[in-house]
Length: 206
Image (spheres, helix red, strand yellow):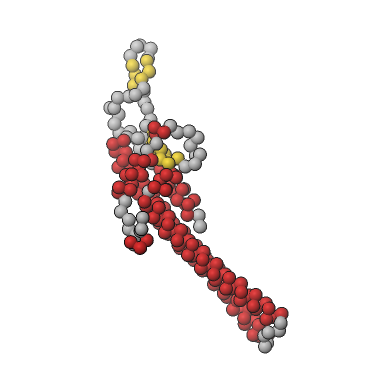
């Protein structure tokens, strides 16, 4: 139910929004250009890095574990709705057949069964809405935790790396990026080193 889309959006926002100004202005500048008086003037260089979202999602233990949890919840909800929907469909077909074959002793009996079917249909719609809301809530909690985890790590990571901008690379949202700016491996390794699973052992068999 849109889990992957939510997760991708969260990672993209979390990484793209992480912007820090360079703190060490005294570092030697890599690029210098001559000026008219023959003296060199230090140029300003922006330090940029990027993180591959797909790799982060597939390799970060937090993502793998909680994506599996959300998928399980989604499948359970879908199976529940499907099963109850089939039961209602069968009951409605049986009602229609009895109605055509004059299987009811009175109009009141037929009306009572029809009303019961209508209540079941309404209950099913409410159940579907409730399960969907529960899954959306779980997904939002997961997304918030993922965003906080990523941003907290990048904040500490950047204390020594001094990047001005750390962005996400997902699909073709960036037309070209030099691999020398790719810090995905560093980020994934650092996140996994920090991460301690909070899932029950029965759900954590990685």
